[in-house]
Structures are given as structure tokens and as C-alpha cells.
Length: 136
Image (cartoon, rainbow, N blue to C red; front, side, top):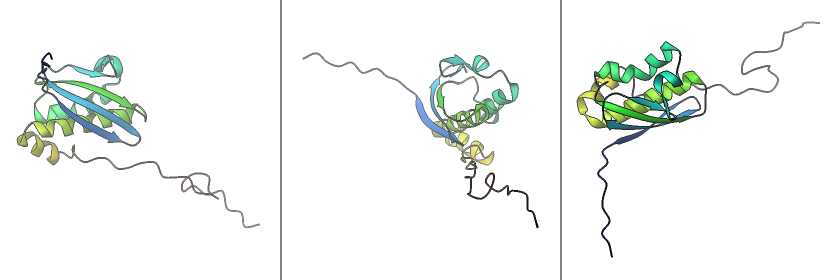
């Protein structure tokens, strides 16, 4: 029987969440290339503020040129997807070193933003907006 050769893959995997967006993030040692859904970061996000949200874990921890990111994101909108990717990158970076974990935790990047849309209640127009009151 032939021997199976093991491929030595060194990567860190993490899942980030924000609203209804879920991002699967894989961090590999590299040059700082970020790929989201098989597209480059600048091709996926044209808005600079969303690029900054995705890059925030790297800018805070000064590890931008040390790792490549391959992310797959589903659900939510552009903004919540960017937040989910940043959360996933932060969780993956925190497993690489204790120093990075402390920096990311102090900046609030390891905490999931648990704010989600409130459900619609019957008798109301939206979650809290009531129809106009008429006395007569």
C-alpha cells in the first residue's frame, strides 16, 4: 500500500459574525494579500471606509505584511460583511500570539457586535413605530 504524503499547511482558521453576515477567514503567512470571495480587497470593496474596517485588525496590531487572508463571506450587507471579516481576522490573529491578542482585545476587536435588527411587533408599523394616534 502506498504511503500518504502529508502536505504541511500552516494556516489559522476563524469565523467572524456581524448582524446576519458570516465570514470564514483563513490566515496564512505571506505578504499581506487579502482575498474576499475570490476577489481582491480593492475589487470587492470600492468604498475606502469599508476597506479600513477590514484592515483595522492589521493596522492596530502592526501585522499587515506578515499574513495573507482568504475570506468567504455570506449574508448581510456590505457594511456588516466588512465587520464580519474584521471580526474573523481578529479572532485568527489572536491565536497567533498572546501579544496580538492583548492589543486586539484592548481595541474591542475580539468582541462580537451583537446588535441585530429588532423584530416587527403586531399592531405597530415597524419594531417600535406606532400608527398615528387619533383621539376622535
